Image (cartoon, rainbow, N blue to C red; front, side, top):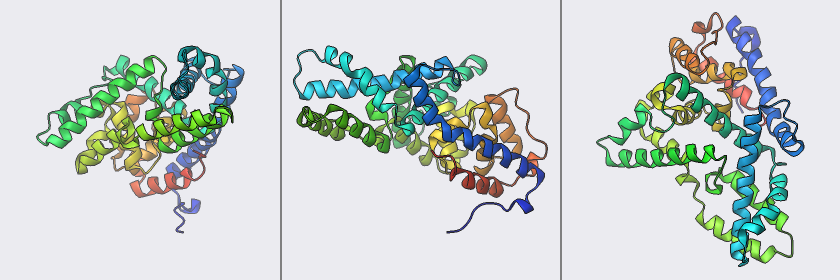
Length: 320
């Protein structure tokens, strides 16, 4: 295996400063899932905002309801709403012990939060961005069709977040699989046959590629060299921007969403630079996201390959 870390002895001062900030950010990222799960279980919101905790709790509870409704349908229960209401709290508690699911829900909450902030502050539409509008009008019918699918998916996401919901079908594949196993174990032996039938139904309907993340990734990839336009948050909108940033910097999309947090600005700056943006363009994006941000002196000297190497070394330590 090739070691992509950058020897500290050869680092410029700006690299040392950014690396130190990145290490601190990695420590925070590695604790988010467990801490958030604890807060949801104990109602101790001292380390996270009430909005974030409430939004994540709502999403996990909604996931629980969907599993229980599927179980009620498979078992031909007369009152599925009463059945789900009786058990959703307990099942949600089980799901909250899975740190990667908590981290994912937290990332979605941060994405929503950023989209709302930019909508209020910069009039950036959370659904129909200028880039998406242009792609919908593309002469290529496949791109236009895909862009329309992204538009519909993003509109649903905004409405779902307003209601603090998360459809099971929108989970990444690995989280979908683990959540199903958690639910099956929760159902117990007495309901095993019913739960297995319900599981088969949910798995048969699941298609990760047709979810919001899958659609946006395909759209960005279809843009080819033009995908650099997606790295402008004002032009692309938050959803496409985060997906493009994750793809261009070889990061998980949840990590890209977390990098929008003020305490993760070093990661955002490195990701944008690794993606190929010029230092002045990196600064422009950071100012959109956090107007009060101050770029470290000497950032213009940081090469994109050095930024990519620092990110690659960091990603091995995030725990996400």
